[in-house]
Amino acid sequence: MPDSGNIFIKGPSVLKGPVKAGGSKNASLAILAATLVTDEKCVLRNIPRMTDISVMLNLLELLGKKVAREGSAVIIENGSGLRSEAPYDLVKKLRASILVMGALAGRKSSVSVSLPGGCAIGTRPIDLHLKGLVKMGASYRLSGGFINLSSKGLRGKRIYLDYPSVGATENLLAAACRAEGETVIENISREPEVIEMVRFVKQMGVQAEVSGDMLRVSGRRDFNPVDFTVMDDRIQAGTYAIAGCLKNSAVDIEYSNPEHLEPLLDKLRDGGASVTAGENLISVRGVSRFRALEITTAPYPGFPTDLQAPLTALLTRAKGVSVVTEKVFENRFLHCAELSRMGAEIEVKGESAIISGRSSLSGAPVNAMDLRGGAALVIAGMMASGKTRVSGIQHIERGYDNLAGSLRELGADIWTK
Ligand code: EPZ
Image 1 (cartoon, helix red, strand yellow):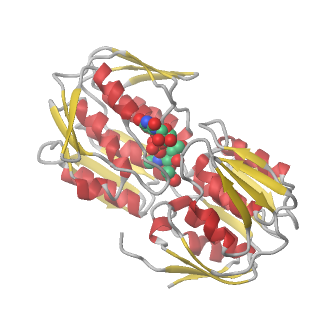
Image 2: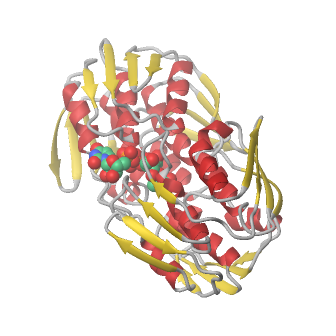
């Protein structure tokens, strides 16, 4: 991706005021892919404007959908006929393009999707996606970097996921919407964004029920037109809550389901911040010296891996030694070396980062290498004294719509160039 510039921050920052998370990137991506299941019109509201969403919209058009943007709404209608090849040059920009595979497999006898490949945070295999589709009657072969799926129609089956994979749950849910009979998926991901996709397919007319870690879906051939408002972005809201812990800061985050963030909010309270969650609002009051924490990431309702990097940034100035263990992805500490350039004392040992809190950080030029690691560097820049330049902000723009602008409105001395 072309380098889209830098974010500059002159710290330390004190943040005060209200902020609202935009529409959920990850729920939007899964739901946009699921529109391939139906021929009916889908009006999707609260869809954020960010690079990942634009790539998914381009892919839907390429696959034959008509796509229109009206403010924060996206209208998806049938175009000239569904195509079934997702090309490498789009999939390499957006791993989540793999989510079109399940929807297409449910209705096309042959589907070809480029293998997404790995990314900075890990190899990102899709073995669980493919194992489930094979169980439903598909077969596939890998050639030329593509997965070529074929099936004479999918049949509902009982599928057990060896790991509660978000993407595999979403792909198999989309495939089950058109499979013959009932599909039961066990050990599903229960991330709120997955539950949001279930809510969407139910509005399409699909009979889908979640009970504990099991999802039951009855396939069908005809669907309802849908007008659906997507939830707010949980990870954006969580990022602002972490930023609200900065010394003397007082941030009120408008977010529709604060209970989604309890795993994070509980830890912020343990660290000494005052955090209250009300109706559609999370109020965070900062603390002069955050206390060290022990964090282990896990599938929902565990501590979210997507907030590990932003919280690690906060812990670099905590009082005491923190231990952050990353159990979801194999390489999600790329931000630590960059934080060390700002004076942080972090030792990465296997799955854990041991962070000895320092009394101060100093601004420095640093480089974002992945989406959430980039957000971590922005938080560190607001904690540091002096000027920080975060380069590689194309990573940040993939998942935050206007992070610098929102933080500037809260009082940070931050700009992009
Ligand atoms: C989704 O990725 C999110 N992306 C990620 O958010 C998020 O970090 C992740 O879920 C975990 O919550 C989107 O929703 C677009 P997984 P996904 O399948 O679906 C292994 C962000 O920052 N695995 O639950 O790829 C995999 O290697 C992004 O917004 C298999 O081994 O996550 C990983 O270690 C980053 N085989 C773990 O499971 C498979 O077939 C979690 O992956 C599938 C996954």
